[in-house]
Image 1 (tube, rainbow, N blue to C red):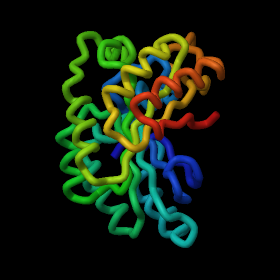
Image 2: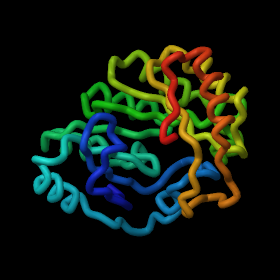
Image 3: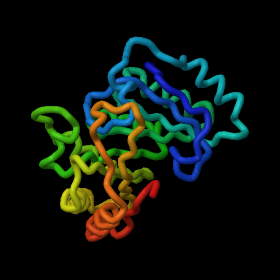
Length: 229
């Protein structure tokens, strides 16, 4: 496992749980507004060992009740199934973040019961996916397969979209909501400049536009919410 970051305590990353967050290195996408650019581009050395992670879990077993695994794209890790299994064996529920590009790997993880909650990013409406993820001629088929997989899985999951002024309009959000309408949890989160971006020119949207985007989403997903606002 290439582990590039480790947050020892979070009340935000795993809904309803006090968790820690493991950040894996590497991603197949190049979203200009990615706020973890160094996780995507700097792949030479791990910053944390698995031993350090599990030592912390043992030490904080009475405090933590979950582990969030994010990236980067965790499903790029060749040992991800083993890593998740060992977290589960240590007694911790797992939240897995993914961009949805690897439905077969995701299906295997769900079948083995290695994730308790999955958060999948929906980058944009289908026709704008390629430009939004920074990959020319991007094939959206795996994204569609992952959407259907989660909707039919019975697992607790969410879809979420990070909104930027550069790539998203209210009409795009309406198209996304129609695309994923058979889902109970959809979150819109405004882009925030972390100072660690692939493209530093990206900007978030103003509050009235976020409210309008939420209204568009709620046409097809009445339970859609704004997150972090």
